[in-house]
Image (cartoon, rainbow, N blue to C red; front, side, top):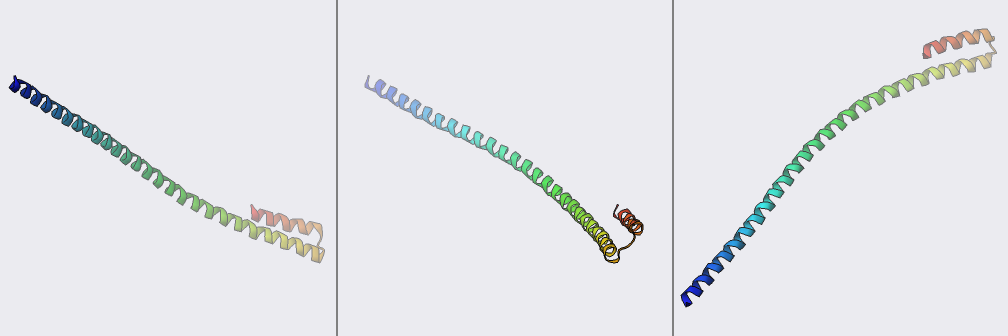
Length: 113
């Protein structure tokens, strides 16, 4: 009887240890799978973010180019307005006839457009 009790206790202890070891293995395996999925998700997100960043950088280059064009046009308009103001000042100083002034202004406005 003693051998049977010892044998049962040994088998029970072995089953308990094997059950515990299997449970730990299964938990580690699940953790590993979860970590691998998370790493895959992060890599996918990183690729998407890189694509978005590249797109934003390209859009920034286009916007900078358009901004330079707008600045050049503003400068051109500024020069043309300076010409109109100069003509108006000359008219005021010399008291030119209104008809002559309107011809000069029309010429300047044609240059502006």
